[in-house]
Image (cartoon, helix red, strand yellow):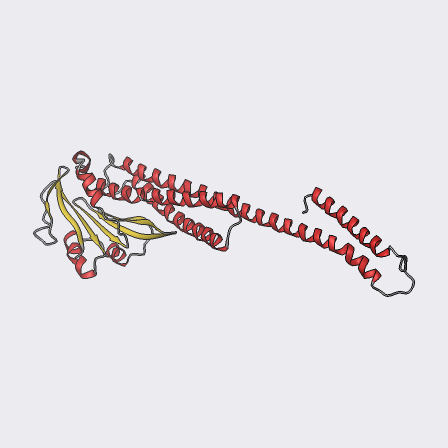
Length: 321
């Protein structure tokens, strides 16, 4: 079985390793075991199912994965699902952590998450006064550890959004940059859909009278809920900024097209004057004004130049050119 760690604790301190066997999982009064697994199979998980009498529906969910964050009660046991998130390049990769919490055990199962709980275990073991609260405090630690990983994702997204915002003001966005904006927006919207159920799960653990959750531990889950709320609020602000970036980019593009249209109209007007005069004198009529005048050619050219110069100056003053 892909067991990351399995230890027995008493009074907030590690007592011994807990091999996954009937003897290894035998606990004395006041002890609890914390077992960490990664992608277990049905057969590998069977010993824990039998030893701790885990509910079949919860076991099915834990092994199948693809669950949204939730808190479920099965008799005197809790089953909690949390979603992990990691930023990889421009995308957010998601995983799952399923936690079984009983009076004498905590079983955490990770699916698709490369962020191990070793650092969390060391942190909790360094605070025996907190760890001796029991499995419910370990559950809080796991959820807080997962939620803390959300902040760096939002920080990186903020940097990308602000960079794109400045880029929009400095120059016109390329097709690649516009595609990047849409990708970022889609990833943030998907991330925000995860935060809602996570916040609801933390709120249930904080406010409801649930088995295995002592009243003095409940307030700790408020901290998890607050973290999720802050991340959600920041995501809302980023989505607003992204919308403004799209609007500014659209306005600047319309402005650029308007400038180009005015320039084309101005040059078309400048070309239309000599074209019209030349077209009239190119009709080969026998009787036309100044047709046989010695200085007619020069007069017509001067007239064309004067009119075009006047139009050019006018367009320059109105900033069409």
